[in-house]
Length: 204
Ligand SMILES: C[S@@+](CC[C@H](N)C(=O)[O-])C[C@H]1O[C@@H](n2cnc3c(N)ncnc32)[C@H](O)[C@@H]1O
Image (cartoon, rainbow, N blue to C red; front, side, top):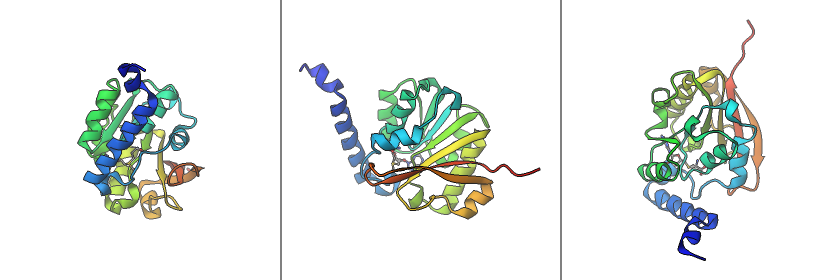
């Protein structure tokens, strides 16, 4: 095996992503919120059914880019993906690896202002943030900002290791959204559930 083959071997890439992730977790365990990147089964569940028609896509907390790669594999063009990552190391590494994806180093709580697609223009938000370890006021800002960035029928996807939706009911009510569990992924470490949040349709 040549050096080039070794460096482009996907197993090497996964190994190096896991190392990067572990290093970031040592630096900022609360921000990172997990000791390893999500597995491919969770990445597939998070992006199931999405296609270019569901774009453009805003990704929150991409980390090493497991969900970004799954979005690309679903046929969403890189120019129609923007990822907001607070960690400088993650942001720089992702921008280097996927130069056609817009990677913004910033706080997902400012997603309503940071979206490069314009207010109310994104088709989907794919959220990899550790919402359970965030204060409710920040979760509210992320949800309100995310829905301000979305089209009226846009969807906000997230995952959790917990037994129920990590967005507390008063925040769902305040933003006017409903959540449904779309998948349970036992093969992830730890097992995770995927939720899809949408604006509540109220009877006229
Ligand atoms: C649990 S990791 C998930 C990473 C990746 N989506 C995955 O599933 O493997 C959470 C990610 O969110 C990022 N993050 C945490 N707080 C953030 C914030 N306020 N704004 C943007 N990114 C944030 C962390 O740096 C980390 O990359």
